[in-house]
Length: 122
Image (cartoon, rainbow, N blue to C red; front, top):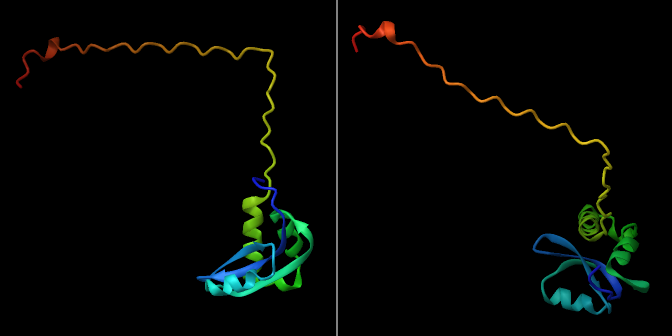
């Protein structure tokens, strides 16, 4: 993660019809969210300060966050922010050289015999 910041309050809120996960260090964040037009605000205090990812993992099974919209916001956050497994970059050891491709045959131009057509009108 890009930051080591710890949070003691986590939850969800809806703004303009979109539910998002919210983080804070104080439960008074509720007032700020209300002031800015958020609705359906559900914030809980954590027992200990946690990183964002740990906090979201803590609330995903909470009774307060079981609505479809909240679970969707939590799942979207986890999909976007969960650490990805590094891609495997295993080299394949080859002892035999791949067979060389045969050179392509050159196309030969066919010459049409027009000797019989000399008397033909155009």
